Image: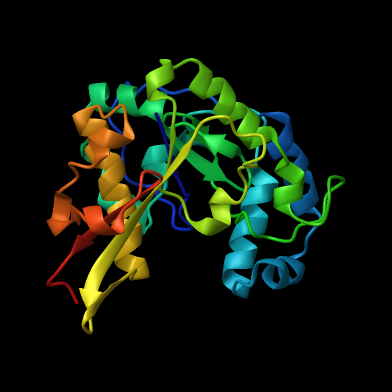
Length: 261
């Protein structure tokens, strides 16, 4: 079983990391460098317009692209799961996971990325901003979905093939923007989507902030329970959520909770 997460826009490269923490390198090496070269040609103003970000953020990322190096070191990078710092990762709380947890996560959790394609939890990552939905023109097409093409799905197939046949499934905890980067026509493993709903104004609905955090909570649950199947995820009960069997289907697990604003 592989769990897919979205990255976060917010990054943390300041909080000290535990000494001796193991690391790996990203699977895709040439593609990020190709994208960085294109991004380096963008002025701060062009980047601001391309990404819809402030001038300040544009200037920050121009500097990041300029500093990007083919060599990943302890100085210029850190493990991806400990670098991302958004709502999903507040739920995941990766810094509180022990080494055995992180080792299990390394074999089962993947973060989709506009720049890196896919990142494992312990892959070193240099700071960047490049959302998957960015319409950055490359030699492969007019956007990043065309740039990545079938590569991400093929990588997922390779990873799934290493697992026992009974455990081969993809758990989608990523946003639609990022999951669209997985070419489903080429993906061999079945996909199970996890949906998180809160009761508000008389009905259950997806509330973005809560849903993002719940995706991180589900990833944490899977890691700590060593869950190896979608069936095992049905026991998820963190933060008041519980499976709603009547609203669920084999390929779509719906978790609901009451009493939250």
